[in-house]
Amino acid sequence: MGAVQLTAAVAFVCLLLPDTAAQNLIKNPREQKTEHSLLINEINADNPGLDTWEFLELYHTSGHQAALDGYYLVFYNGNGNQAYKVLNLQGHVTNSQGFFLVGSHTVNPLPSLTLRPNTIQNGPDAIALYYGNGRYFEGIKVTNNGLVDALVHKSKKADKADTLLSVLTPDQDAFLEDPLFRSTDESLERCRGSDLQWFFQVAMPTPGRDNHCIPSSQLNASTVLISEISTVSTSEGLEFIELQGPPSTTLGDLVLVLIEGGAKEVYFFMDVYGKTSPDGVLLIGPAQSKTPVDLQFPQNASSPLFRAGPNAVALYLGNSSSFSLGTAASATNLLDALVYTSNRSTAPELLEILTPGRPIFYEDERHQQGDVSVSRCSCCSVTRDASAYALSSPTPGQFNDCPSKRFSQAISFCLHGADCQQWSPGSNEIQRVLAHSLDAQCNCGVSAVYFKGKVYLYWQWCSGLG
Ligand SMILES: *[C@@H]1O[C@H](CO)[C@@H](O)[C@H](O)[C@H]1NC(C)=O
Ligand SMILES: *[C@@H]1O[C@H](CO)[C@@H](O)[C@H](O)[C@H]1NC(C)=O
Ligand SMILES: *[C@@H]1O[C@H](CO)[C@@H](O)[C@H](O)[C@H]1NC(C)=O
Ligand SMILES: *[C@@H]1O[C@H](CO)[C@@H](O)[C@H](O)[C@H]1NC(C)=O
Image 1 (cartoon, rainbow, N blue to C red):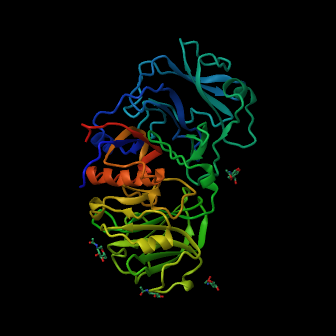
Image 2: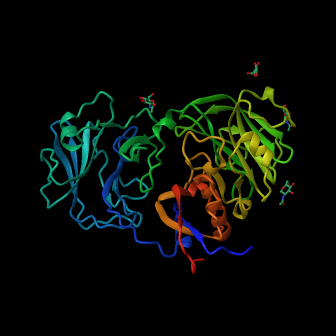
Image 3: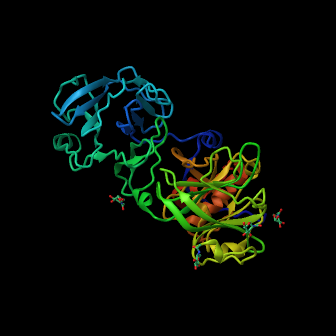
């Protein structure tokens, strides 16, 4: 290392962390001075057939255990606008992650307050959360006195709930738990829009867990993306490639291609067809996979299929008649590509062809042991960009296990010797460098998608910091 300059820059970023990394990495989290609140986070009022798997999930935005003394849950009937059920939450607490479940005894995890089958009406109805001194009882007329949060819901598009809406959530429409959304069950989940406003969207039920908020723009998107890859075959699991597309949709006219990084040549390709799951997932893998695959690797595919070193998985529009073994990598009709390396070698020329200006994805030693996969964690319109992926637990055929906002921390780095006047990279570039150096230290699989928001650079003395 050359002489360290006296000045240094401190970069402040907000890091999203999985639970374990949050515990290992951040030893002295600074107390956040945010006001926290209790929210109605998810509701599953209507199940296919009998309603024996209903639940309502509350979430305390601290993400920690919180007392619920003084809170009441009131369920209103849209026909008559009176309370049909009141639950006093006195003496109850959220769990250590801020969740509190009310629901049928068949729900897993078991709700803290259990309800008899068919308790929560399907709508048009409302659920309201109050904080107050017990003026809430069955039969009361709908009120906004002491109101903390409310959701007006329905299961038929034509249903009306004008009075409930005008009292509880003026300027909003009733949210539709559309039974046609999934062939199995669905729920209404609270999500935050790009304008930071809360809204509820129909989604796969996730009781006691973070909601899987995919912006509706992606739910409607016709694009098919590379969602997750597992490139190592071990006793724990086999290689697979998972695609994400629109839910319950027949895919075709797609080719999956594996490209060798050094030679930039195609070494495997197959036509992709089949129907995505109700969550939009299509799983491609070997016939002997434990998780049933939607599409099998061809019989004559080599095993293991993925090669060591820098390589790419690419998804093209078209059919396999346009490809042959040894074809040079190309961006023609390319829908999505993930360039990754299993040893530290990179493939600059392949990157330039498939994902120009974007980084390579580094797998790590844990990946070689097969207990982690490469998962798309940055939503939606981002294609052909490895920085949209993170290392995570393999979730073949299911939504990816991504860094959670609930464990986010603001962190600062001291960049010794950095001459920031000369260093004028974009925020993305800084995030990538920081993620890479952080991961080199903690070996905890941090990648650029763990950073939320912009990186701010300040000039500051930071002697004494690591
Ligand atoms: C998504 O599709 C549904 C039904 O086809 C439509 O009602 C809704 O407006 C669409 N949303 C967006 C954001 O395009
Ligand atoms: C596998 O078999 C198909 C025909 O069934 C052939 O087109 C393809 O080239 C073969 N692939 C390999 C890697 O041998
Ligand atoms: C990485 O793997 C590739 C392909 O096997 C090989 O050519 C390259 O030398 C390896 N690089 C390192 C640093 O091991
Ligand atoms: C494959 O694509 C070519 C055009 O690229 C087309 O002529 C051919 O009919 C297609 N084959 C199939 C089986 O769809």
